[in-house]
Image 1 (cartoon, rainbow, N blue to C red):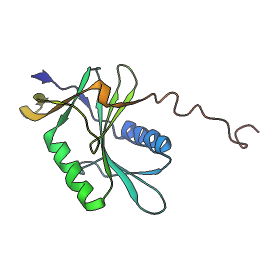
Image 2 (tube, rainbow, N blue to C red; image 1 turned 135 degrees about the vertical axis):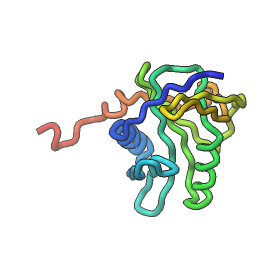
Image 3 (cartoon, rainbow, N blue to C red; image 1 turned 180 degrees about the horizontal axis):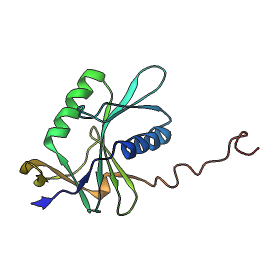
Length: 152
């Protein structure tokens, strides 16, 4: 059992969603705080992706996903008929890790302990090895060519 180091930062979550949208060639929408998922990616025809963003202080060779979040994302996916993503932004290495919950991935069932002001809570979930995650370097996401307006 390990301890979770989670950061709640709505501004950073919006930044991460904007990078994911750019990488996917879509637009993004951030959901209100305490909603069952954090963002949606869409085009002019429909919603394409819904997802959860977690910000972690430390790097781990396998990332934990709580069963509760997996269940919510899969349930929301049935409603919106789009792809569910679980996303982690690691502050230690600066990378974004993205997992498509509809793709095949290996995992080990585990539990994680969270410490809140109200006490200690244990969550059941999955530890997913790094090899199953898509790694995105946010620093290179905006290194595209300059637009004609930028070069003037």
